[in-house]
Image (tube, rainbow, N blue to C red; front, side):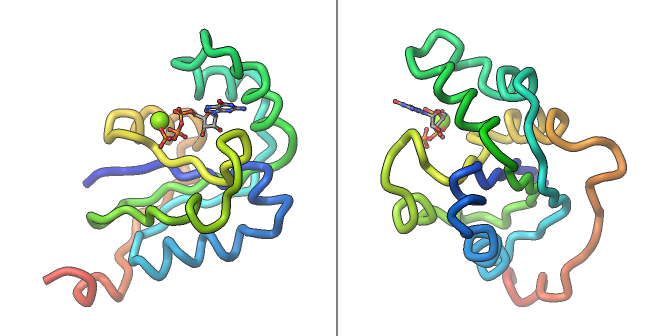
Length: 133
Ligand code: GTP
Ligand code: MG
């Protein structure tokens, strides 16, 4: 099963979009296994985005991600992507509301970074047989 780390970024929290965004994942049938409101320390932000260290916007990105609480989510996506959250809700790349892991390997890496042991739940949603044959 693939695991994805999804994060509602500080602008999404400040703009009151937590419910709207989580609702889209729920409606799509994604299984949430971890969920928390979290103030990200600078060191964690730098580790999470380490591949972008050399970019000109790196320090702006770290300031942005640590500027207020984020909502950390761990999901097991069924197959399709929720896709249109940024398209519908975001205006600029530098304020793009959500993060989602870009590969199964990064999903694993990011979940280990953002969640401690015991914070991730294993459960079977009752709707599962209604989502896939
Ligand atoms: P896509 O790859 O477009 O699907 O999104 P991504 O979130 O994976 O983008 P990427 O890995 O390129 O960059 C990670 C994050 O850095 C983005 O989500 C933005 O928050 C931020 N970012 C990327 N480019 C810029 C930029 O030009 N300016 C600013 N301020 N932030 C940026
Ligand atoms: Mg990317």
